Length: 139
Image (cartoon, rainbow, N blue to C red; front, top):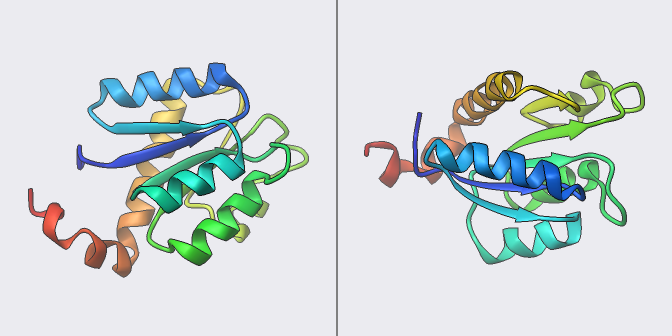
């Protein structure tokens, strides 16, 4: 596990942001948060992130649109989508959209950890990730 990962958590529910931010922070990751897709895009433009964890159902810019815009501008970033509406947004749809991981709410932190690790390794498996992290991967 690479501890220097910068993670952006995006959700309109402050409870989810607090839970995931605290969980990831205790594991040594650098975590930022946004309460909507527009705020997330501004943060992505201002700073470098390795992984985005985003809710799908948000006003204005939903998780799918955030994923699309993030992939267009920052193809090296790993992306996990979350939803409380798994019947409306099935796993297959999220993966076809380009997500590296997917989790239905509510979830346990144990299940989140498994999805997080899977998305992390999916991102690492892309050749462009290694090129972007060449200087820090050896630490």
